[in-house]
Length: 305
Length: 305
Image (cartoon, rainbow over all chains, first blue to last red; front, top):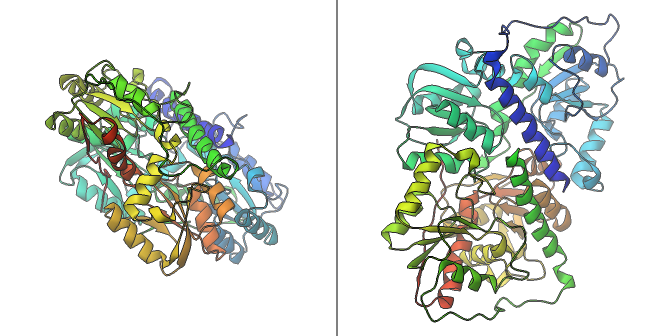
């Protein structure tokens, strides 16, 4: 099934990133402020020129196999305005049109699977409606996932750290680990909810547990990378965006049953990485001075009852 | 990565099951009461004899490739008592020992990934603790996932329908679809929470929406099978155990934005399938009269805050 190969490549990519990070002590340090040079073309920018400009800052770009492709529209279109977001939802598309922008840079898929394949969606009313809406407003969608995670520092990680006010704890040699002053799990959760604007989180653990070593893995890296981070770092708490419930959650549940002080906090996928697409605005705006870059959050889709 | 092939086979299996169901109108009807013949051996039963006895009731069993293998212990061990559960957690293992039972039939993995591979867990303290606990109490764990879903009717589906009091709506020609009298989404959610013992569910949709056609897909079938069921059946609501947040949830969110009356309710993986392992007791007990069969729920591992 295509779905499987899509999940594969998603997890392979994320696993590779994880591995690259764990050996980062062996390669020269990159300062947070390090950036590659670029030149903004003098004429009005096309979508492809903005993409190319971004790629000059990404180590190893362009990649042979990546999900970071144009999902809708024409790369030669002139850019009137850029919107950054997690998901190019129907609602985000409408807001983009209302802003007079015509280029959405989204972190996650547009068409409901990792590789955004559309053959299986032909004649699907939701796909057709969304596709027609994009065409009607002349909006191009490009995914910025693999490249943004490959940027040094990882743009999502830095966005989340910044939003949490934890950027001073960033360690480029071990970017997943955040060593904070001793804080109760309860206070960490309250702080994360408030600073990231999250209504509710799911957790496994004791809210009274004291935490210093926080493993921060926004998004859905997959069970094995998440558990391998737990094995390697033995953090007091792992904070993630999303899990598969038969993997990381069960490992943490068993760890709790044997009284290991290792908690899990699940923020929600969109909420956990949205700050990375907000941080992208401050990173990208100086590079495209004549084009307005706006962050439009797609928000967490669920309610609870 | 091994993780990937594990996810693959999980989704391939579930997709196959889904496909088999969609063509079930083409094959002869199986009544709910239909069962294959078996003979209980006169001597004390071994684990393997119980497994073999179960397999005589499963169409096409034994399968060449299945995750339904013995995860710990010896199939030749005599069975003192059987526990059915969703996850053989450390806590469920302790309860099994306290009951004097020594055979756990679990629906989901024991060791944190779909194929229960353990090489990557060597020297892991959680794995070693759990493994030692199983050995100390002489408990065998067998997974009953692929076979139970292949049983006609699907044992999980029937367990959930029964617990919901919806067994009269079961249609063997289209087992995922449940046509109920017109009910508000709010009342469906309240009913599901109360009858399945769930503290909280996540949903996307309008609680005031009226629903007749309910698509019921416990567990985590994967985004494409879930969305393909939506495409084929156009239900008023899809009730699932677990989703990937970049797949089914985003499809439903876009459907809602275009005013399609199609809601999503996410019960939680363990809670959504546990009734299938409870239903297994009434199904299995008459087949192994001299051995006590007990259901020990593993429960949902999360709290919310």
